[in-house]
Image (cartoon, rainbow, N blue to C red; front, side):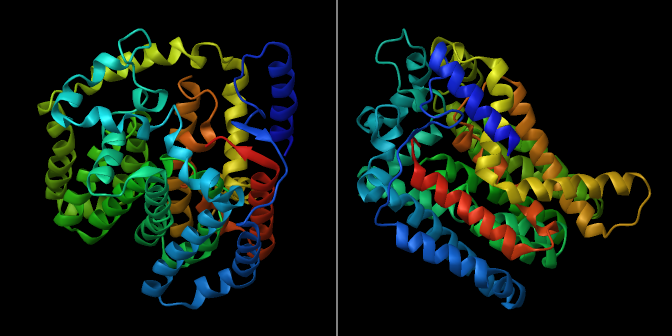
Length: 431
């Protein structure tokens, strides 16, 4: 709470004096505007229902019934929060603004030619330079929405619902991973917190929810592969890891989480080292396809760094954002996650000191530590100054299971719900 308060007060001072933050309500990309909307009643009722019944249902439902219920409830929570701003502003136009992917649909009428020329339009001085988000991501990101358009799902409404529907599955992927690597009891305790995450405020408004889901399923399938000794899961995981890297350059940091999964599943790898073959082969498919089509990932990344510093990224002060980004993460993951992470750290420190802990608790703590490390590397890189409430969604989701260590879940769920409702009713979020 002190970190968030400091980020707000210091940020307002910097923005009010030097105007170098380029956000309306520091540290978030948003503007102040208390409001109600058509999604308000549904969001409040859903929050009350999850707080009251979520922990009990998660504890007693059959596993195969709990997963689709978690997906459906997460999607309902994301939608209801988005609809607080109304269908048009909350969902339909989010991906159609001048920075977004739907602005370039017509420029992909010849997909092979667009891929060959993609890097020529990244820099601001280049002819017909790409909008910010297109320039800032590999072409698999805009190509997703081009393909949706080609099959008849045109416009911001369909694009928004695609991101919400796919993005909501991320919570299921995280639960599957926890069950495979730690145990089912921890996954069940984490489930209501993953469903009722404050991150839902941004998962309904940006393509990063879609990116987060792809990355989460890559990790989940890897966990299933190493624990179930499955070549098929390994190949599918590799395929999604390859796609992840061509959706967002920054998601190469998911490799830290993947490495932790491999370390935790080392018994399975020792018994069947051949699992690495389909994993690596699958990971090569998407990069090979884009490279053969004429897109050079490394060249594009270096051009992106230049483009980043050509715009607001070159003006925003690193000295503020290097810690204010973490305040954004507190708002994305909630105070319950902060409390859970303290217990996560305590679990690891006591284990290192020789204290006895359940192996499942330690394994979950290690998984979340890898996600936290990835987030900190992204922070220190200076390539994520501001807007991290959406950019870091793929990492933030892996911090939420820390809430499984909390002993009063309903009270903490209520805190999470109140935070999300306040954010969406007091602010007009930009993403």
